[in-house]
Length: 113
Length: 112
Image (tube, rainbow over all chains, first blue to last red; front, side, top):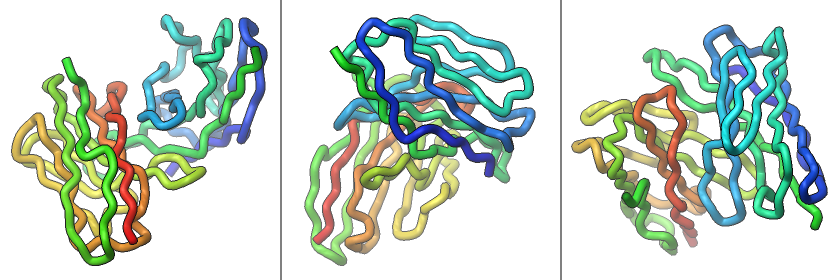
């Protein structure tokens, strides 16, 4: 199974941009890169996903390296509500050709007022 | 639109007891899955289903059974609870397997 590597924790100040890195050096050509976040005592929440091109949505941007071995989640202006654990996940095919998510340990983001 | 609903939210069991964790979604999603999350760890896939009548094992299926008789419901059964199954359990669904998943709020299960 392809794995992702993320820093254990990061810190940011409110209203500043945050760049959350993720390494996935063993990614295969069909693996999508997904990002979820989990607020305390809640279920994970979808943030963004992509395959090869950079992606933007109302929550964040996803920058994918040209060789796809790494990606960066960008929160353009951090708020206190963005304090969460952020998971970078690959979506892989199983033996039955169904996609499944392989979760790592995530990055715990603290946002200072 | 309730999304993904898990019941109960909390449960305490004794070793050897059995129980069923309920999961229901009202979004007509085909893909549903169960995860467990232990302290300081990411989610681990227990079982998943790509549609009614079809289930398959994830990373940590031992000690758990699932069935998918309807599109809406995907219950998780603990056959004989063990302390090692103390965890937070999350149910998730998506329209297709490759699309973003919607998660429930979790069931916090303690086994004594």
